[in-house]
Image (cartoon, rainbow, N blue to C red; front, top):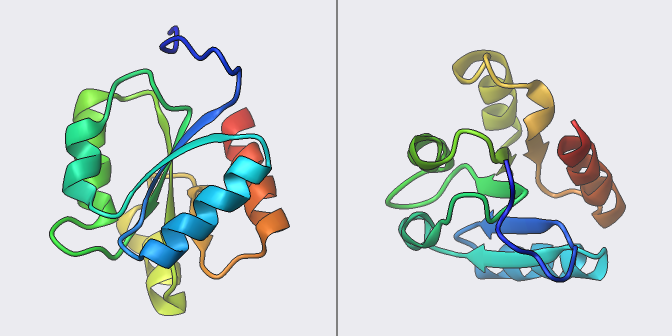
Length: 131
């Protein structure tokens, strides 16, 4: 599969998180680490703007209004079954439950718990991108 032309050569990441502060911080941290980043605070807008073969990784918050991260995941998969996707959650209980029950078929490493140190986040993202 050939990604849409990326003149910068940077890995492209899409962040979808309904909390503006989290979205902005994630974007800044990733851009400072050499990624090209697009972000949305509204999952519906993110879905409507999503283009196949544009992104190397999607980072989806799980708990969002209107459409949660898993619903967005399923809708994205209808358009693009190849793009790598990971999930963010701030809830310890929700994080454990999801890793162990609801999305057992997904790699457990694709779930990242907030808050996370910047260096650890970059490490996790690079691990996902290289898998």
